[in-house]
Image (cartoon, rainbow, N blue to C red; front, top):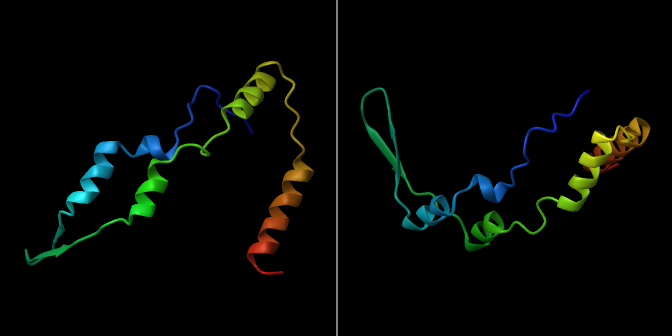
Length: 99
């Protein structure tokens, strides 16, 4: 397994341009053309809470932690405990299954 340190991390809010979010308020209908050229339209709107969540970036990425990890990788000091990772994955799956 390798980690490509040259790729940047993108937060969800950066993926959605503010222009895109404001376009949601216009509520323009989407159209779909079928085989017989009939057009079907539908309106899709996001709640204010959803729009707020899409704009919030406070808790997306802990940049201090990312910097520490990058530095540890660069110095060859990063220690990965695969047993701990496996245990946490199993624990999460058990919680998801309600066990």
